Length: 214
Image 1 (cartoon, rainbow, N blue to C red):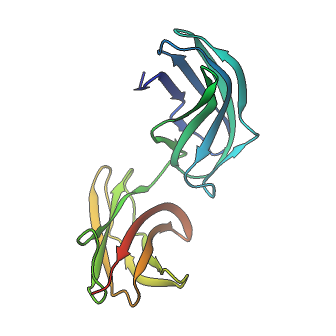
Image 2 (cartoon, helix red, strand yellow; image 1 turned 90 degrees about the horizontal axis):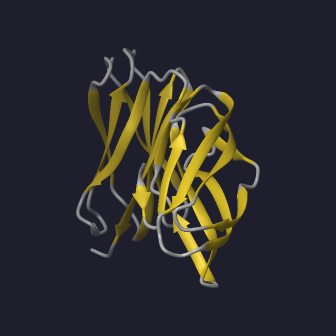
Image 3 (cartoon, rainbow, N blue to C red; image 1 turned 90 degrees about the vertical axis):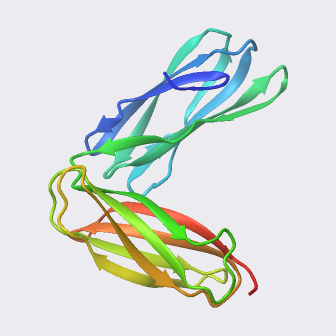
């Protein structure tokens, strides 16, 4: 099982059908300290595609070498990543722990939007064109889809910066697409890529760029 000290964990199943389903989390305390008053919660990176129902689970004590299992009810329509958190006490002091991302595959996917990167230096100067690249991977043989790029400026303007019709992809075949824009203000830009299949959003990726003075 994966480990992020002091917790060993496993979330399953990793593949589920759409609609309402249960995910099971097994956690083990592999550290030397007793953990108490644990609030264990599951979080979705994309609540549009996968929504966690309920308020999580409460665990009064998790002793060293002890394993426990908790269950989460989710409503899912598309694949996305999730993570879970544990908040409680260790030696009477606050204890907070967060898992790495776990990808949950939902239903039969045609393709997956795997990444979005801003191909620029860490802090591009104002006036420099920023190129954004998104990669799509075929899960099964699929026809072309629509990929949209959007930019959210520091003052809140949400602007489409590109639309691409993707090519047909076979299983495990990848293709990378790009859009460019020139920021007109300094500050933090949030970049989004959305993948649509016949009008249904099946993927989303985000990127952050900080634009400085020229």
